[in-house]
Image (cartoon, rainbow over all chains, first blue to last red; front, side, top):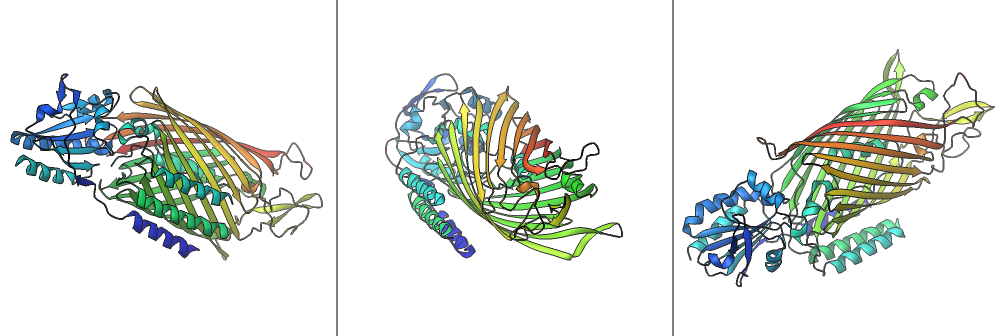
Length: 165
Length: 73
Length: 392
């Protein structure tokens, strides 16, 4: 009986650990949206046509999102002069915890508040965080689900590719 | 007998569940991610209390869980 | 035997199905943290206190390792000790656990090993567990297997010094199988169901316990004799609900049965209330009741009355009620150096045991009871915990 259990567990483990990619190429026009930003004014995605845009869906209660923020800030500062911007879309119904977090992890790229989750639904966000890279023509090119240390290298590589276009 | 029915039920629920779209989206998990909703907010304390009871009661097992929370990544 | 085999077949089928159908999705490892606990138990003539230290660190990507060191410093003048005319004793038990969690995609593989040692009992066990997130992270299925082996000794006094009886060395082995399901039901409601079956084999009683029999109107004593196998099954469920004004309530229950004839039911209700930005107050209320093992009796009619006989109160019919409270104070919220978060916690539980067929046979200078008419035993214990938690 013991050997049966061990072999069942072993098989389950092998199957469970089958590899899969969490970053993928995507295509199609990036749906346009208008959201209130942390500067108080509304921002439209279409305003950024001509730039490479990284749309990052995040929440204050999401640990990998908090981990990723300072790295996104570094990337923004590095590549913005090449025509690159990041839009940090906060998905929380109540913006207070997000605003509080931004006081201790300040960022200089625009933060948008998707309090009614309209944009999350529009982009079919299926993981937290989610990062979409949009090219200068407004087409979605790459999608990253989740964040793990090392992903920022992939982001940088893809941003460099898209700014050269 | 009970165990057989229980597992059958689990498999049924889970297999039909897999073709259903998640009804709580990843961005709607603010409440579930709150530490007060965690099954093991204080693991050292819960483990200690569990030990106190197991040393004095004959019942054991059936209490424990993983999952819930923010469901990130 | 058949039930267990069928169980395993269903588990494998379910897993194969789920692995194929689950969406590309990942999970997170447990948080990096360190906890230092001071625990204290005082009740029924027993005082046990000591530390429990837990440290966990991961690499944020794939691995998380942890280690726990736990100590019980025991001073016991319990009813079991006093009823047999023994004197108060002190003892020390130490336990260490080390473990690792490995994350890949949506699955976490857990391995851990535990060692426990006191002067008359040495135990070690190994645990393997697997948990998988599926259905967009709303469902978590987990399975676990543990295997343990114990060495049982008996202390005796030689020239006033407590040593292990060289003529007594027994063993016991244990296997545990667990299956769990956690399901997010709504944005504010989560449920967990857990099934666990344990099989023990070997020397399963306490070498110091004795049964009593009616020896012509006086107490006669005989060393207990237990079966050398035991199989138990437990099924528990818990619901946690988030209240809109930011509080949480949980209800849980468990049913238990084993092949010694013991059945048990317990349930718990808990409420967590944050107070301001830094404090959380928890209340809990727990009730437990069990029925006695088939071969348990407080007073036998004669020695060797049955094949197996026990008088350990742990095998009797009894119930207990606990009320507890925890206060947590988060004194670092937004980071301080390498520390992300820190809290100081105080916890108090008061548990009352009432035995339905275990009697207090300690000598009472004022009253003399007829055999079998001694008062039923009961006691209350105070459990106090102080702990510091750091997240980094």
